[in-house]
Length: 305
Image (cartoon, rainbow, N blue to C red; front, side):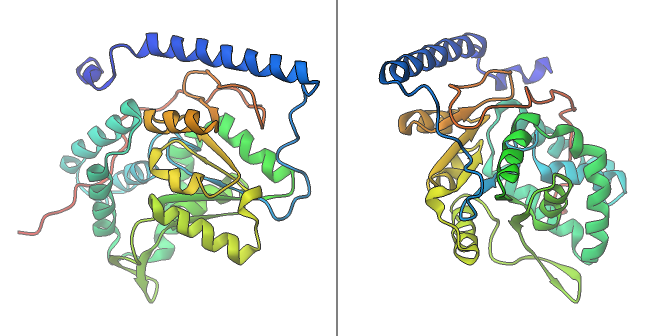
């Protein structure tokens, strides 16, 4: 781990203390203002029985520690979908993602290309079945309890809750079902007669594509986006977060944290046990688990010579 120390800013601990102090001060000021105005109670959210509201959750580092695609690749490696020598590069990429907390577009593109290469020629039903096993083996213990509690609050209010992720829709659907959520929007791999072709349908569900997917689903479901909530850790999801009336920054990267503060969006951080000002949904489930190794992997794209 020491060899990866340069990935983490040296001033991280001091910055964390400064952030905590600032957020505590802001919360005290907010409470003082509310008490002076005689409005100490926050409006109830989510609103029970509001069937025109729903919640949309990013997956990687928001609902689950690390990237679902890399955990899936780890399971495929165990099942000998690819060789040991192909493991190292993507173990490094997963370590980067967990330590830096930032998606590297080149890493993610390579991972998607690799996944498509690996599943080409396999049946969709086979990968769905394997996905169930991999969830139990590598993903279940990496769900952030705090984020899970936020999703449950929407479910308890009678609202639908969707995962929105660049991960393959088959993996996302397994995770959503295991968590008791409504469903999932994810990247769609092309299949013909139930067999993967090694191509995507359109493009990965990432960045602006997520916002378009949420917009389309809201129209189909008759939702009022102004009454909906969205949750993400990444500045790449600002288009999705900006669509809804209740955006949340969860375990945010530095760019999203800055953007959220500027717009007074709600913040939650389950990585250190530090929470931002307590507004909106209470964080009922405590801090997220800190378990898990950094060496999750998926295959290196096989270059044909």
